[in-house]
Length: 118
Image (cartoon, rainbow, N blue to C red; front, top):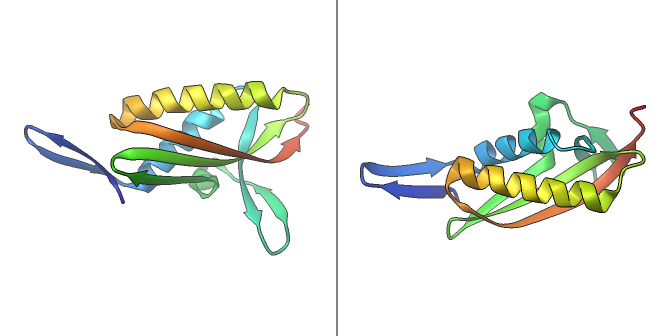
């Protein structure tokens, strides 16, 4: 289901992929996030996604105009995962709600790998 906003002039429908791309770009701006990850279930190999393919590591669902976002991330070596994840959740929730005018009900984060960028 897509998110929709009814205005006095009509209805605005927002595709889940638009929300996923926006949320992914927001996430990349957060401290400690190296990038989004795509996991090959068959091989168990984690792949760092380029900015162009960022939405493959972000999944969005909308139910009753409430958004759930799932991130598959790679974090920097040496950071506090809980601090990075809390910052990611707060930042993305605020920015996506401002962008869409819809409520972000839940954010699930899967830390798939760690990368030493030093």
